[in-house]
Image (cartoon, rainbow, N blue to C red; front, top):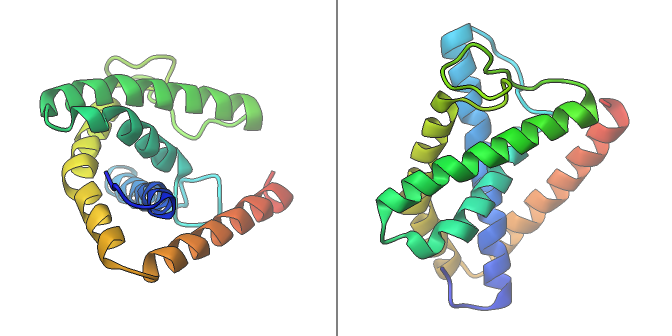
Length: 172
């Protein structure tokens, strides 16, 4: 990771969250379009991001960073971690909103429809992409940009807060 200022570390984590939330949204939109011929915002917020992917990525990077030189360990631990994050998130969202955002019932090795083998293998592959391709690009961006990183992070945080407020007021 960065051995820079506290600000750079904050930018690092915000960008991990931002990029992963957006990529997760894109992935789900493409997946559901291809396999179910559905175009819809898969998230519970208005914007093009899924915070579960962002939080999952932050958790994964925080825990797995020390194993970066051991890709098999990263892959296997990411299966375990994403299983827990997806299950807890799915269960909590059902309890809070009384709605199911995904249901893996009927898929191989599913647990109460909240998690299945296909999803955690997909997320483990995504973790490998995050760890070995995206994260080095984020570090390079933070190291090479003086002001852009700050404004990108501030703008995203403001948009994200507004989206959460509007979602709370108008959607639920």
